[in-house]
Image 1 (cartoon, rainbow, N blue to C red):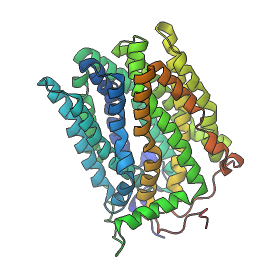
Image 2 (cartoon, rainbow, N blue to C red; image 1 turned 135 degrees about the horizontal axis):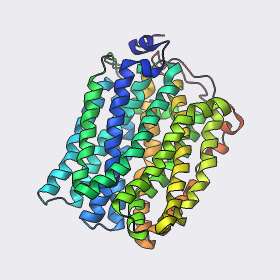
Image 3 (tube, rainbow, N blue to C red; image 1 turned 135 degrees about the vertical axis):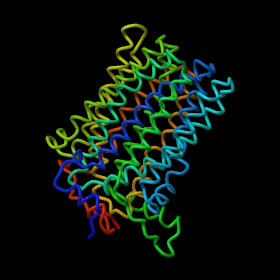
Image 4 (cartoon, one colour; image 1 turned 90 degrees about the vertical axis):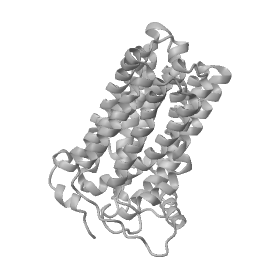
Length: 434
């Protein structure tokens, strides 16, 4: 079994002492901050600048995630055929150009919902490739004993950006208008690409398997995930969570601005509450996994935090809006703790040659529900109002832990020993049933 240069170089030190990982982390921070600004600014551009109805705002959210449904599976096979670092840089540059077109069009008075849909689709496609490559690149960059810490650091960075980003986005929208605020996202993607170029470690070009078609490689990734009993239930639970999360995202701007009467600057602070919970979850995830066991952490995190979603629809104008913030903070605390535990497990158990396809298959299964959730959110909000749609979201979060509680995870403290080193040769995964 072979090891990658990145693994041998970083062995014996924490992930933050790895120069290349620090560049990866810096790029992630820049990208996440810009993305969080756009999370506020893009729907506000539709609601405030273009006076879009609730259904069109839901369609915009659906367009942002539709690529996970349509190209999620082949993306994994493509990622496994190329070096991942150059792909990450190119994806950032594509996203920079796409979102940068929004303020340019607004400046000339030609911005339309059609352009916002196209920008969302293009950035979604680039994000699919970026995310699959990013999750597949990390196990090559770090040794296995540092994967949980590395994922925890990335989640901490993401959550910290979620704290600052919405508030910054709300302030920029207030000062400059929604289209101009989106420039921060374009700058974030550019800075991310520059940080990734600072990584000096170069992967070898993957060797193409002779006579193996793209369809056969996609099938191999699907088989790996679907035949593994723990991956199946993780996919089911995460897919349910993402469906109702996307539904919430598609209606929360309309709900908070039109139903609760919040100003854009206050809206940004309200959305930062979920990131405060996520940041706390990222900081606590490693300790919780060690204290109660990684397997228990996966189902406990969702079972304990999920019921707090019922506070979302209880929010009202004025001080009652704080119920929305509290619910978001607790739910996303649990979501980040859950993510650190299950993503680290996935990366450890998978052979290196299958990492792209495994991650893409799971992304297809769990992120492919998001455009559907966003579409349903827009339909429900358009027919019954945003308040009714938020009630549906809250009730849906009660379903998230059910697949986990009905699985072997419920009787386990720790997850089983992982398979071979992710950088090593591909061998049969554990728990494959005939």
